[in-house]
Image 1 (cartoon, one colour):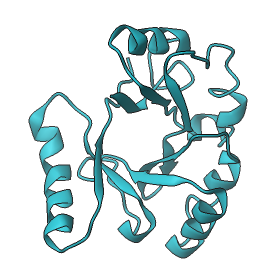
Image 2 (cartoon, one colour; image 1 turned 60 degrees about the vertical axis):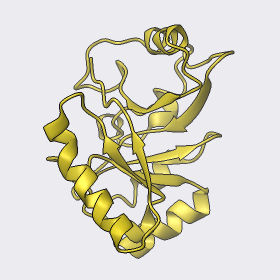
Image 3 (cartoon, rainbow, N blue to C red; image 1 turned 30 degrees about the vertical axis):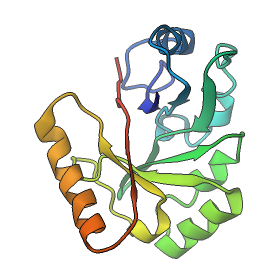
Image 4 (cartoon, rainbow, N blue to C red; image 1 turned 135 degrees about the vertical axis):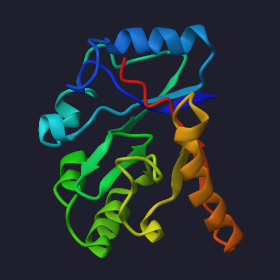
Length: 171
C-alpha cells in the first residue's frame, strides 16, 4: 500500500509539511511505496532541484517514486518513475498537443496518471496518453463519484485503464 499523490512544503499551496514527516507517517502506517508529488508550477518545473534534492527524500523501508503534480492549463496529471528523470523536459511540453506530450512521456519512460479527472482541475488531455487515472483522492464520497463514473465508462467501453488512489493531501 502507499500514496501516489501527496504534497510537502515544496508545494506553495501546502502546509509546511516536511518530507521527513510524510515519510515517517508512511512508515508508521506500513506503506510500501510513496510518491511525493509537489506542484511543478511553483518551481517552474524544477522538481529535481526541490523535492527530489531535499536531503530528507530518502527511506530504507519505503520505495520512494519520483514524480510531481504536472500542472497544466488543461488539468493535472502525475508522471511517475522508479528513477529520477528530466521532469523539466516534461513540464516544458505541458501545453503542447497531446501527440507531443505523449512523445516526451515515451522518451522519458514515464508512467502518466490523470489526476482527479472529475474534479475542478480535471484532466483535459486524451486518455490515450495515460497509463492510469486517479479515481479516489478524497475522504468525501461525492468528490470521488465523478472520477469513478469516468473510469467506469472507460471500462464499459472495453478500455483497460488502471484506477488508482492518492490522498492529494496538502496539509
